[in-house]
Length: 162
Image (tube, rainbow, N blue to C red; front, side, top):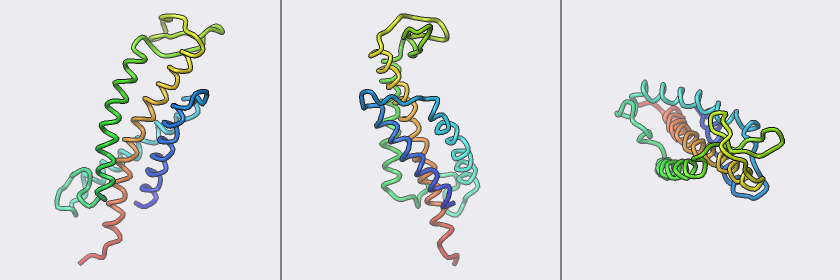
């Protein structure tokens, strides 16, 4: 379980770095370069769910976060959950008309392949930053949950059995 804990913790740190970089003007994250962050969440989450459902050593089968996860990790998950909701609402407000794209050498905002309007390079970069913020805000939450669970599972494995 310790390698899975480390992988989840690394995912949390990288997603936090991506998220922070989206606030720096001129430092636009190319979503095509960080898509593995999105994909890696799924196996970690599936393993966590499977292990949480079959684990009955805590007396609360299927409890989440595990009762023996450190309190600060449980608090982090709660804070990131609230932040993800607020961040997602802000993403919807800013990208209501669609996402930023380059088309025929122009910057446009498009929705489901339909060009909504032409936008400036500054608007294009701002919308790209909001896209990166939207994804990375969720990644932080979805990496913190397995991190806490795998840490608790690992601690249980280390404890001597009575």
